[in-house]
Length: 150
Image (cartoon, rainbow, N blue to C red):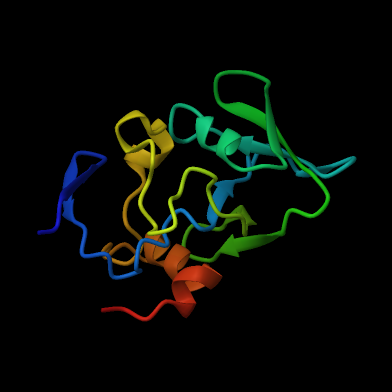
């Protein structure tokens, strides 16, 4: 039986169409007020959309420094795969991080599901969404693009 997943006031029925790959890579929104997003030594300014960035700590080689309530700096260490992509539906740049969450079990399930970060709780499923700017994440995720839907 598929468990209901609540996101942003909606309830989604997770069909695991992506074979539980939603935590195998992720996108962070670049703060549009910062013209130069790339700082020295692979630092980026990112906007906090989700209330916290605890999730960053679940990936080795990534760290955050809080600037204010909405803005943080992310440091991406050497060896961490990433690129900058622009979502044409909302003209926003995203840092696409190709790193699996450290809290994923071998079967793709989250080992801290009940204590997961708010960013995990609030993301709308890009496969089930009908919003173009959300579907873009699935279309541009290498993991989700390469997944074979059930």
